Length: 358
Image (tube, rainbow, N blue to C red):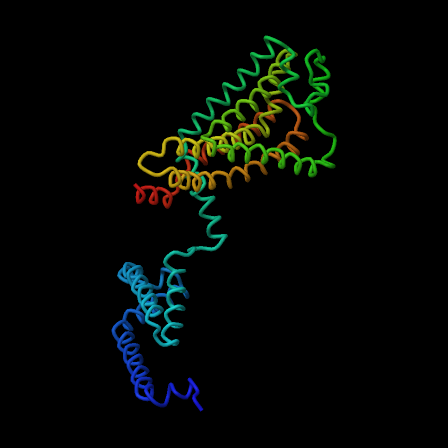
Protein backbone atom coordinates (compact mmCIF):
# COMPACT_ATOMS: atom_id res chain seq x y z
CA UNK A 1 0.00 0.00 0.00
CA UNK A 2 1.39 3.35 -1.00
CA UNK A 3 -0.88 5.88 0.66
CA UNK A 4 0.18 9.54 0.68
CA UNK A 5 -1.33 9.86 4.15
CA UNK A 6 0.76 7.00 5.53
CA UNK A 7 3.90 8.18 3.75
CA UNK A 8 3.61 11.49 5.56
CA UNK A 9 4.23 9.62 8.81
CA UNK A 10 6.51 6.85 7.55
CA UNK A 11 9.53 7.16 5.39
CA UNK A 12 11.01 10.62 4.80
CA UNK A 13 8.32 12.55 6.71
CA UNK A 14 8.61 10.49 9.86
CA UNK A 15 10.94 12.92 11.69
CA UNK A 16 10.07 16.23 10.00
CA UNK A 17 6.41 16.45 11.06
CA UNK A 18 6.91 16.21 14.86
CA UNK A 19 9.80 18.70 14.66
CA UNK A 20 7.62 21.16 12.70
CA UNK A 21 4.77 20.83 15.20
CA UNK A 22 7.12 21.33 18.15
CA UNK A 23 8.70 24.37 16.48
CA UNK A 24 5.32 25.94 15.75
CA UNK A 25 4.24 25.39 19.35
CA UNK A 26 7.39 27.05 20.66
CA UNK A 27 6.88 30.02 18.35
CA UNK A 28 3.29 30.42 19.49
CA UNK A 29 4.23 30.22 23.18
CA UNK A 30 7.08 32.70 22.77
CA UNK A 31 4.84 35.08 20.78
CA UNK A 32 2.18 34.97 23.51
CA UNK A 33 4.63 35.38 26.40
CA UNK A 34 6.27 38.44 24.82
CA UNK A 35 2.97 40.26 24.35
CA UNK A 36 0.58 38.76 26.85
CA UNK A 37 1.15 41.52 29.42
CA UNK A 38 -0.17 44.18 27.04
CA UNK A 39 -3.08 41.99 26.04
CA UNK A 40 -4.09 41.39 29.63
CA UNK A 41 -3.83 45.09 30.45
CA UNK A 42 -5.99 45.97 27.44
CA UNK A 43 -8.50 43.28 28.36
CA UNK A 44 -8.74 44.63 31.91
CA UNK A 45 -9.34 48.21 30.73
CA UNK A 46 -11.92 47.14 28.17
CA UNK A 47 -13.77 44.98 30.71
CA UNK A 48 -14.03 47.90 33.14
CA UNK A 49 -15.20 50.25 30.40
CA UNK A 50 -17.87 47.77 29.36
CA UNK A 51 -19.19 47.73 32.91
CA UNK A 52 -19.04 51.41 33.79
CA UNK A 53 -17.75 53.51 30.92
CA UNK A 54 -14.95 56.03 31.34
CA UNK A 55 -15.69 56.50 35.04
CA UNK A 56 -13.97 53.18 35.85
CA UNK A 57 -10.58 54.00 34.31
CA UNK A 58 -7.99 56.65 35.20
CA UNK A 59 -6.30 59.16 32.90
CA UNK A 60 -3.16 57.05 32.41
CA UNK A 61 -5.20 54.06 31.27
CA UNK A 62 -7.28 56.24 28.98
CA UNK A 63 -4.12 57.55 27.31
CA UNK A 64 -2.69 54.03 27.02
CA UNK A 65 -5.87 52.59 25.49
CA UNK A 66 -5.19 53.54 21.81
CA UNK A 67 -1.61 52.26 21.99
CA UNK A 68 -2.67 48.98 23.57
CA UNK A 69 -5.39 48.59 20.95
CA UNK A 70 -2.92 49.09 18.10
CA UNK A 71 -0.53 46.60 19.72
CA UNK A 72 -3.26 43.98 19.93
CA UNK A 73 -4.36 44.66 16.36
CA UNK A 74 -0.76 44.26 15.17
CA UNK A 75 -0.46 41.01 17.12
CA UNK A 76 -3.64 39.74 15.48
CA UNK A 77 -2.23 40.53 12.05
CA UNK A 78 0.99 38.65 12.82
CA UNK A 79 -0.95 35.72 14.26
CA UNK A 80 -2.97 35.38 11.08
CA UNK A 81 0.05 35.60 8.78
CA UNK A 82 2.13 33.06 10.71
CA UNK A 83 -0.74 30.65 11.37
CA UNK A 84 -0.36 30.57 15.16
CA UNK A 85 -2.52 28.27 17.24
CA UNK A 86 -6.27 28.64 16.91
CA UNK A 87 -6.81 29.50 20.60
CA UNK A 88 -4.48 32.53 20.44
CA UNK A 89 -6.09 33.65 17.21
CA UNK A 90 -9.62 33.45 18.63
CA UNK A 91 -8.55 35.28 21.79
CA UNK A 92 -6.98 38.14 19.83
CA UNK A 93 -9.92 38.46 17.45
CA UNK A 94 -12.34 38.80 20.35
CA UNK A 95 -10.09 41.24 22.24
CA UNK A 96 -9.49 43.48 19.22
CA UNK A 97 -13.19 43.57 18.40
CA UNK A 98 -14.12 44.59 21.95
CA UNK A 99 -11.35 47.17 22.12
CA UNK A 100 -12.31 48.65 18.74
CA UNK A 101 -15.82 49.28 20.00
CA UNK A 102 -14.47 51.15 23.03
CA UNK A 103 -11.95 53.19 21.03
CA UNK A 104 -14.00 53.97 17.92
CA UNK A 105 -17.53 52.83 18.63
CA UNK A 106 -20.48 54.97 19.81
CA UNK A 107 -20.12 56.26 23.36
CA UNK A 108 -23.76 56.76 24.21
CA UNK A 109 -27.24 55.53 23.54
CA UNK A 110 -29.98 57.36 21.68
CA UNK A 111 -31.46 59.13 24.70
CA UNK A 112 -28.07 60.37 25.86
CA UNK A 113 -27.33 61.57 22.33
CA UNK A 114 -30.72 63.29 22.04
CA UNK A 115 -30.24 65.02 25.38
CA UNK A 116 -26.86 66.31 24.22
CA UNK A 117 -28.44 67.33 20.90
CA UNK A 118 -31.13 69.43 22.55
CA UNK A 119 -28.92 70.88 25.28
CA UNK A 120 -26.13 72.30 23.17
CA UNK A 121 -25.44 70.21 20.06
CA UNK A 122 -28.17 71.63 17.84
CA UNK A 123 -27.68 75.28 18.79
CA UNK A 124 -23.91 74.94 18.39
CA UNK A 125 -24.30 73.49 14.87
CA UNK A 126 -26.58 76.40 13.94
CA UNK A 127 -24.08 78.97 15.18
CA UNK A 128 -21.31 77.28 13.19
CA UNK A 129 -23.16 78.05 9.92
CA UNK A 130 -23.93 81.67 10.82
CA UNK A 131 -22.48 83.01 7.56
CA UNK A 132 -24.72 80.74 5.50
CA UNK A 133 -27.71 81.79 7.62
CA UNK A 134 -26.96 85.44 6.86
CA UNK A 135 -26.74 84.72 3.14
CA UNK A 136 -29.95 82.66 3.16
CA UNK A 137 -31.78 85.35 5.16
CA UNK A 138 -30.73 88.01 2.67
CA UNK A 139 -31.94 85.83 -0.21
CA UNK A 140 -35.29 85.17 1.50
CA UNK A 141 -35.93 88.85 2.17
CA UNK A 142 -34.94 89.64 -1.42
CA UNK A 143 -37.30 86.93 -2.66
CA UNK A 144 -40.24 88.41 -0.75
CA UNK A 145 -39.47 91.87 -2.14
CA UNK A 146 -39.19 90.49 -5.67
CA UNK A 147 -42.57 88.76 -5.34
CA UNK A 148 -44.18 91.96 -4.12
CA UNK A 149 -42.66 94.08 -6.92
CA UNK A 150 -43.61 91.58 -9.63
CA UNK A 151 -47.32 91.62 -8.77
CA UNK A 152 -47.30 95.40 -8.31
CA UNK A 153 -45.95 95.69 -11.84
CA UNK A 154 -48.21 93.03 -13.36
CA UNK A 155 -51.07 91.33 -11.48
CA UNK A 156 -50.80 88.27 -13.72
CA UNK A 157 -47.59 87.42 -11.88
CA UNK A 158 -49.74 86.53 -8.88
CA UNK A 159 -51.18 83.55 -10.71
CA UNK A 160 -47.75 82.50 -11.92
CA UNK A 161 -46.24 82.58 -8.46
CA UNK A 162 -48.95 81.43 -6.07
CA UNK A 163 -49.73 77.65 -6.07
CA UNK A 164 -53.23 76.67 -7.15
CA UNK A 165 -54.20 75.39 -3.68
CA UNK A 166 -53.96 78.97 -2.40
CA UNK A 167 -55.91 80.48 -5.27
CA UNK A 168 -59.45 80.16 -3.91
CA UNK A 169 -60.93 83.47 -2.80
CA UNK A 170 -57.41 84.79 -2.21
CA UNK A 171 -57.05 86.37 -5.62
CA UNK A 172 -56.55 89.91 -6.89
CA UNK A 173 -59.88 91.73 -6.93
CA UNK A 174 -61.36 89.79 -3.98
CA UNK A 175 -63.29 91.91 -1.50
CA UNK A 176 -62.00 92.73 1.95
CA UNK A 177 -64.68 90.52 3.50
CA UNK A 178 -63.72 87.53 1.34
CA UNK A 179 -60.06 87.86 2.27
CA UNK A 180 -60.90 88.40 5.94
CA UNK A 181 -62.89 85.16 5.92
CA UNK A 182 -59.71 83.21 5.04
CA UNK A 183 -58.13 84.54 8.24
CA UNK A 184 -61.06 83.63 10.47
CA UNK A 185 -60.90 81.05 13.26
CA UNK A 186 -62.43 77.59 13.12
CA UNK A 187 -65.44 76.80 15.29
CA UNK A 188 -63.94 73.52 16.55
CA UNK A 189 -60.70 71.55 16.48
CA UNK A 190 -62.32 68.62 14.69
CA UNK A 191 -60.17 67.38 11.83
CA UNK A 192 -57.26 69.67 12.65
CA UNK A 193 -54.94 66.80 13.59
CA UNK A 194 -55.17 65.45 10.03
CA UNK A 195 -54.58 68.98 8.78
CA UNK A 196 -51.47 69.20 10.99
CA UNK A 197 -50.08 65.98 9.54
CA UNK A 198 -50.59 67.28 6.02
CA UNK A 199 -48.91 70.57 6.86
CA UNK A 200 -45.93 68.81 8.42
CA UNK A 201 -45.48 66.65 5.33
CA UNK A 202 -45.50 69.71 3.06
CA UNK A 203 -43.21 71.84 5.25
CA UNK A 204 -40.74 69.02 5.85
CA UNK A 205 -40.63 68.28 2.12
CA UNK A 206 -39.70 71.88 1.30
CA UNK A 207 -37.02 71.93 4.01
CA UNK A 208 -35.45 68.62 3.01
CA UNK A 209 -35.42 69.67 -0.63
CA UNK A 210 -33.71 72.96 0.27
CA UNK A 211 -31.07 71.00 2.15
CA UNK A 212 -30.58 68.25 -0.43
CA UNK A 213 -30.13 70.70 -3.31
CA UNK A 214 -27.15 72.21 -1.52
CA UNK A 215 -24.87 69.57 -3.01
CA UNK A 216 -25.10 71.42 -6.34
CA UNK A 217 -22.89 74.16 -4.85
CA UNK A 218 -25.86 75.67 -2.99
CA UNK A 219 -27.31 77.48 -6.01
CA UNK A 220 -30.57 75.43 -6.28
CA UNK A 221 -31.13 75.90 -2.53
CA UNK A 222 -30.98 79.67 -2.94
CA UNK A 223 -33.31 79.57 -5.94
CA UNK A 224 -35.82 77.50 -3.96
CA UNK A 225 -35.71 80.03 -1.11
CA UNK A 226 -36.27 82.89 -3.56
CA UNK A 227 -39.26 81.14 -5.13
CA UNK A 228 -40.94 80.28 -1.83
CA UNK A 229 -40.53 83.78 -0.46
CA UNK A 230 -41.68 85.34 -3.73
CA UNK A 231 -44.96 83.49 -3.18
CA UNK A 232 -45.16 84.98 0.30
CA UNK A 233 -44.38 88.45 -1.04
CA UNK A 234 -47.22 88.17 -3.57
CA UNK A 235 -49.69 87.14 -0.86
CA UNK A 236 -48.57 89.95 1.45
CA UNK A 237 -49.26 92.38 -1.40
CA UNK A 238 -52.74 90.89 -1.91
CA UNK A 239 -53.83 91.30 1.71
CA UNK A 240 -52.12 94.65 2.16
CA UNK A 241 -53.88 96.04 -0.91
CA UNK A 242 -57.18 95.17 0.81
CA UNK A 243 -56.14 96.91 4.04
CA UNK A 244 -55.48 93.60 5.84
CA UNK A 245 -51.69 93.72 6.04
CA UNK A 246 -51.60 93.71 9.87
CA UNK A 247 -54.22 90.96 10.14
CA UNK A 248 -52.39 88.78 7.61
CA UNK A 249 -49.03 89.33 9.34
CA UNK A 250 -50.58 88.32 12.68
CA UNK A 251 -52.22 85.23 11.12
CA UNK A 252 -48.93 84.27 9.48
CA UNK A 253 -46.77 84.93 12.56
CA UNK A 254 -48.40 82.17 14.63
CA UNK A 255 -46.66 79.44 12.66
CA UNK A 256 -44.53 81.49 10.28
CA UNK A 257 -41.89 82.50 12.81
CA UNK A 258 -41.15 78.80 13.33
CA UNK A 259 -41.80 77.54 9.81
CA UNK A 260 -39.82 80.25 8.01
CA UNK A 261 -37.02 79.96 10.55
CA UNK A 262 -36.85 76.22 9.86
CA UNK A 263 -36.80 76.77 6.10
CA UNK A 264 -34.08 79.38 6.61
CA UNK A 265 -31.94 76.88 8.54
CA UNK A 266 -32.56 74.13 5.97
CA UNK A 267 -31.53 76.39 3.11
CA UNK A 268 -28.49 77.59 5.07
CA UNK A 269 -27.45 73.99 5.81
CA UNK A 270 -27.67 73.12 2.11
CA UNK A 271 -25.76 76.27 1.20
CA UNK A 272 -23.13 75.40 3.81
CA UNK A 273 -22.43 72.11 2.04
CA UNK A 274 -22.36 73.72 -1.40
CA UNK A 275 -20.12 76.55 -0.26
CA UNK A 276 -17.66 74.15 1.38
CA UNK A 277 -17.49 72.15 -1.86
CA UNK A 278 -16.92 75.27 -3.93
CA UNK A 279 -14.30 76.63 -1.51
CA UNK A 280 -12.79 73.61 0.29
CA UNK A 281 -9.65 75.48 1.39
CA UNK A 282 -6.78 73.16 2.29
CA UNK A 283 -9.09 70.10 2.36
CA UNK A 284 -10.17 67.89 -0.48
CA UNK A 285 -13.65 68.47 -1.87
CA UNK A 286 -14.87 65.14 -0.45
CA UNK A 287 -13.45 65.86 3.01
CA UNK A 288 -14.94 69.34 3.05
CA UNK A 289 -18.33 68.00 1.91
CA UNK A 290 -18.25 65.24 4.55
CA UNK A 291 -17.46 67.67 7.37
CA UNK A 292 -20.09 70.21 6.35
CA UNK A 293 -22.56 67.40 5.66
CA UNK A 294 -22.26 66.11 9.23
CA UNK A 295 -22.82 69.62 10.59
CA UNK A 296 -25.74 70.18 8.22
CA UNK A 297 -27.31 66.86 9.21
CA UNK A 298 -27.39 67.95 12.86
CA UNK A 299 -29.11 71.18 11.83
CA UNK A 300 -31.62 69.23 9.72
CA UNK A 301 -32.61 66.93 12.58
CA UNK A 302 -33.59 70.08 14.44
CA UNK A 303 -35.38 71.50 11.41
CA UNK A 304 -37.64 68.43 11.34
CA UNK A 305 -38.55 69.17 14.97
CA UNK A 306 -39.29 72.78 14.03
CA UNK A 307 -41.53 71.62 11.19
CA UNK A 308 -43.52 69.46 13.62
CA UNK A 309 -43.96 72.45 15.93
CA UNK A 310 -44.90 74.70 12.99
CA UNK A 311 -47.50 72.22 11.75
CA UNK A 312 -49.11 72.01 15.20
CA UNK A 313 -49.13 75.80 15.50
CA UNK A 314 -50.59 76.18 12.01
CA UNK A 315 -53.30 73.60 12.60
CA UNK A 316 -54.38 74.54 16.13
CA UNK A 317 -53.49 77.99 17.57
CA UNK A 318 -53.64 79.72 14.18
CA UNK A 319 -57.05 78.20 13.48
CA UNK A 320 -58.48 78.62 16.97
CA UNK A 321 -56.98 81.85 18.36
CA UNK A 322 -58.74 85.06 17.34
CA UNK A 323 -57.41 88.59 17.27
CA UNK A 324 -54.24 90.06 15.79
CA UNK A 325 -52.81 90.85 19.23
CA UNK A 326 -53.10 87.29 20.51
CA UNK A 327 -51.65 85.88 17.32
CA UNK A 328 -48.71 88.27 17.41
CA UNK A 329 -48.02 87.24 21.01
CA UNK A 330 -47.82 83.56 20.03
CA UNK A 331 -45.67 84.18 16.98
CA UNK A 332 -43.42 86.66 18.79
CA UNK A 333 -42.94 84.31 21.73
CA UNK A 334 -41.77 81.49 19.46
CA UNK A 335 -39.48 83.81 17.52
CA UNK A 336 -37.91 85.02 20.78
CA UNK A 337 -37.53 81.42 21.93
CA UNK A 338 -35.74 80.29 18.75
CA UNK A 339 -33.42 83.30 18.69
CA UNK A 340 -32.55 82.83 22.36
CA UNK A 341 -32.03 79.10 21.98
CA UNK A 342 -29.79 79.35 18.93
CA UNK A 343 -27.75 82.44 19.69
CA UNK A 344 -27.95 83.15 23.43
CA UNK A 345 -28.20 79.70 24.99
CA UNK A 346 -24.66 78.38 25.40
CA UNK A 347 -24.38 75.65 28.06
CA UNK A 348 -21.07 75.19 29.83
CA UNK A 349 -20.45 71.80 28.22
CA UNK A 350 -20.91 73.26 24.72
CA UNK A 351 -18.60 76.17 25.49
CA UNK A 352 -15.96 73.75 26.83
CA UNK A 353 -16.19 71.62 23.68
CA UNK A 354 -15.79 74.70 21.50
CA UNK A 355 -12.69 75.76 23.40
CA UNK A 356 -11.22 72.26 23.12
CA UNK A 357 -11.89 72.18 19.38
CA UNK A 358 -10.24 75.56 18.97
